Image 1 (cartoon, rainbow, N blue to C red):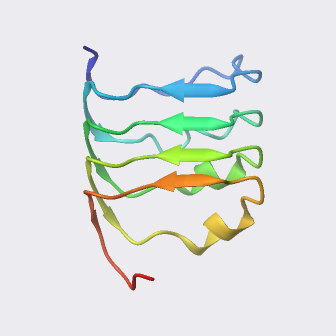
Image 2: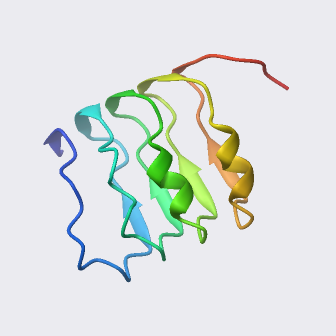
Length: 104
């Protein structure tokens, strides 16, 4: 039962492959620089929290990402076009947020 905001990620976690904080009580925005130094990140799981704000552009630096799960939060904005640059991405779950834009 983690609560509070997500802190910035230390630079010495270059080998980190999975972040899974699903079903906690995290609030606030995802830090803009959170993904700047996580080149090996493969899975990001932040669903079922109370996160708000936009998806940070630094996420799209994680070229190894194959899974993004952000559903059941209070995130907003639109899904950045840069998501198309994540060639390894196989699964994305962003439902139950406040995203805007066209749907397929």
